[in-house]
Every structure is written in C-alpha cells, then in structure tokens.
Length: 410
Image 1 (cartoon, rainbow, N blue to C red):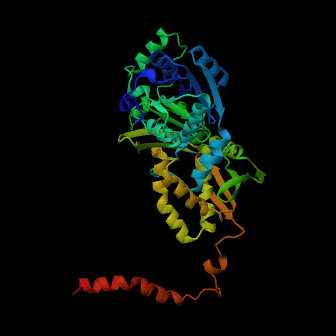
Image 2 (cartoon, rainbow, N blue to C red):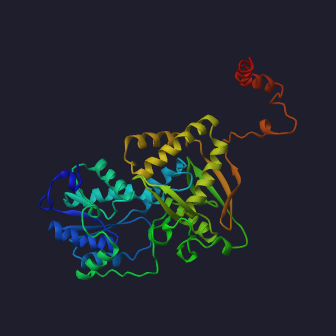
Image 3 (cartoon, rainbow, N blue to C red):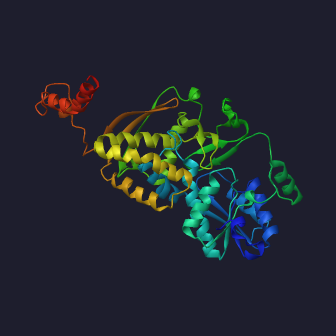
C-alpha cells in the first residue's frame, strides 16, 4: 500500500523525505533526484554501524548536493548490544554459512530512519536498494512495522536511471562530486560485524576472489606462524570479558575482530538464495563473529540440557530466515527471541579458543554449573553408572526395529 505504484499518489503529496544516505554514487544521485521529482526538503540520514567513513566528508557532500538537513547517527553500541548479540545468542546462521552481517544491520538503520522522520515531521522515507536485492525488503518491512503511515519511495523501482553509466551521467550533469574508479569492480557493505562483497568480478561463481579485494582479514597463508589463544567469558549467552578484561559490547566485538582478522579468520565464499527468488554469490569477512559463534556453541555444550539444545536448534534455520528476509520486527521473530533468550540463562562460563591461519578451534570450556560430569562420562571404573542398565535401554529402543523386521520376514 505504501509504494509509489500501489498508492496511486503523486509527488505533490509528499512534504518531506528522509533518505537513507551513504554518500556513494547511488544515494548521492537519489538525493538530487528526489528533490527534482518531489520538490520538497530531503533529509540525508547516515547510520554509523561501525563502517570506516569520513563522516565530515559525508555531511559536506550531502549538504553540497542539496540536503535540507544532514544527520549522522552513531548506532554502534545499539547495533552490537541490541541486534548482533541477541542474534548470536540464537546461533543464527543462514543456509549453514552466512552470519547475517548485512541483514542484521538493516532493521536498526530503518528504525532510526523512522525515528528521524517522526522527529523532523517527514511523511516519507526513501532508500537506495535496488529492485533485485534483499535490502529493499528488509528496509520496507521495517518501515511498515514501525510506522505504516510513512510513504515509501524506492527510486530504483521507478526511475529510468537503470545503469551505472546513466547514474554517472546524471551525477556529472548535476555537479555531484562522486569519484568513480575501476579499482573496485564489486559492491561492498561494511559494519562492525562484517564486510560483504558482491557483483562485478564476483558474478562468476567459478572465479576465485582476488586477494587484494579483502579489506579486513589477512590471508591465512600470511597469518602469524604462532597460534593466538583467547579466553572469552560469557554471562547469559553474551560475551562480557576477554582474557579476564571486562568489555562493552562494541569493545568486545572490536577486539575479537582484530584478533580474527590478524589470523585470517572469518572468510566465506557462498552462493546464497535471495528472498526475492534468485541466487547470488557473496564473499564475506566476519572475523569476530566467527570466533564468537564457535565459542558460544562450545559453552552451550556443557551448560544446556540435551533436549533444550535440540529444540532450540530446530528453530535456528527459521529464526535465521526471518532475519535474512527482513522480519526482525515481526511478532514471530520476537516470540522466538524470548525462547532463545530463556535458553541462555544458564550459559555462563569461559571458553578458550585457539586461532591459527584461518582456523578457530575450541580447546577448552568451563562453567560453575556445568552439566558435564566426569564421574558419569569416564571410561575408568566408576560407582555412579551401571553398564548393565544399558542392555534394557537398548532392547526397548530396538523393539520397533525387531517387530518391523519380523513383519517383513513373514
């Protein structure tokens, strides 16, 4: 109901727009295009979720391109505390590989955009996502969940600037200072959790990514020849200290990122299924997240009941799909989050990991209330377990198999 084609409303119906702005070619062109088509003030909003940007330059570029107001929101602490950590408490992973670095940032960026729209009296929001990707869905589902009265403007689905060259020509015609080079023939998205690379040279799934593409992690072959050991303390499923030093959520992720990146940890090259129906090749760097997920699962192995783990794990694919598909603010995700968080009340303890040349190996785990009891698990003589009891257990488990075999033999 909120898109241009569905609403049937024209440009004259919009009084002010808040644009999710990055300062790159697409959103710089969109900023000027919105002013020309809608003839109203456009607020340029940029979200700092940990990507390395010259924010003063972003502000200046937006102002020079005609933004009525420029807002840069520092969302780093919220991003890690309220989005990344809850997702990792659930061990979320999409299609067995992708740690959802781009997906988890979009609902936060959209939430802040809606807040700014409400604060500045805007009646419309806009984004630079294309009509082929997942981000358009993630942004717009979030807008609809948080403020259905806002009008949604998605230029890529309506304008005729449908090629990179047309965007460049528009920018040049309107004096928009957007440097364009051939040195990075792919698109990137970065935040505190990951860097993603898509498109361009990566569209051939047989082509190995060039080493100079990676911006964060050192090549595993060039990583240090000595392993790095890390002790990570958890409380209720969240990492709270590293090598005995208490850290904030951002501080923790930054330290894990640094250690992982220096040792070549966290590179993934996958072909994933987009929500809109097509397959897409993506290359990701997620150094700290890779370490965090491995350590968290190791601590769960000694603190969670078997059936709780199995029930929770059965929900992880669905939970991960909800995040990937843009349903962070949907009631089913919120309900599942409560279950995930309830399972974490006992996940308290310490995990030791060994990272070395692109690998992350768990080498120790301990917890005050560990369910792992050596006196039960030992192969040595014990007084707490009668091995004879196993005979009846196995016979009962095999009863249905015996009956099936008897029937088939009749």
